Image (tube, rainbow, N blue to C red):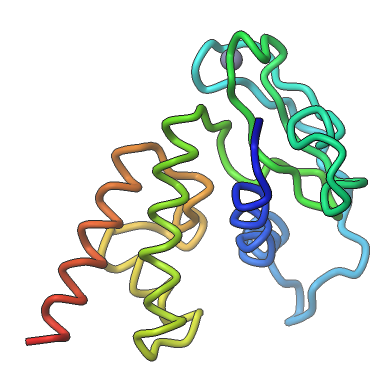
Amino acid sequence: MGDIADYLLEQEENFNCFLGVFPRRRGRIPKFPPKFTGKVFCDYCGAKAELKDSSEIYGNAEWARGKKVWVCSRYPECDAYVGAHSATQAPLGRLADPMLRQWKKMAHVEFDALWKEMGMERGEAYEWMQNNLNLSPEEAHIGKFDVEMCQSLIRAVQEYRRNKRN
Ligand SMILES: [Zn+2]
């Protein structure tokens, strides 16, 4: 069973993913982006993922109403899923198992501190992430990370904080 923290962390990346999936045209964000029509596969077992109502994962909580999630078709045997973008229904990254969900959560706590506590603008923090981990703007989203990448990000932020203190 996922919880609201899982879900909100994914939503936090919404805006950036949105720009990544649908790059700005003539400086404007399209008002009605097309629905995602691609196929999504589980990164663990290779089975197809299905777009489901988030209540199947998050229960009947008020906040989850109307939201969608990409879930491995072998769920719950294969416990892997990722939130869907609310406008396009595109997956907000790769499917995550319980271990990856934990690491993503920890990576978010560390990374968000850069722009919530360490005086960076949010955009600067994402640029910092790209430079430090050698990622393209499209790759620089925690939702797209595997466990190893989450760990690299956490190490990089901790090192940055240490250097800032000294
Ligand atoms: Zn699976």
